[in-house]
Length: 142
Image (tube, rainbow, N blue to C red; front, side, top):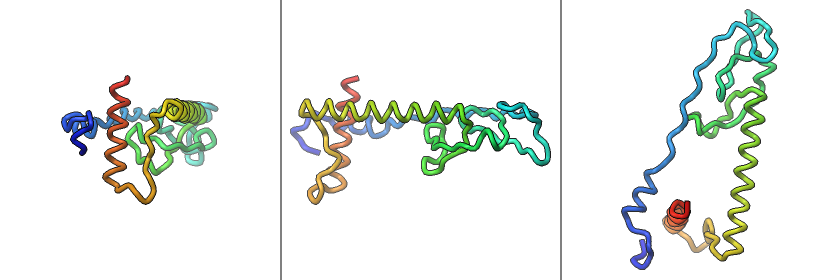
């Protein structure tokens, strides 16, 4: 912590503890047939659930996967999702990447780009502190 910075310790602590809570996971539908093709589930046609919308699908219509940490699932493990949800999730991911890249370009052109780290110079604490300051600055601008 640098005495000359305009970030006070109270703001730092609030920013550190304000992690978004996961959204509630959907209730799983217990349908007797596939939500897409209407084929009845039986001993050979198993019911699967989309982890995003909760609808019941046969294996052919729930063969996609996507990471869903915002729903409280492990962020390292891709979960089963239906095709419709996969399209929505891929579209959202693309939008987030484009917005992030545009923000980085805007910050670079304005001379306000906060580097992630400086190789060979930064300690882990330095990088964490700089990222925290950038997060607080971004939160203030919203």
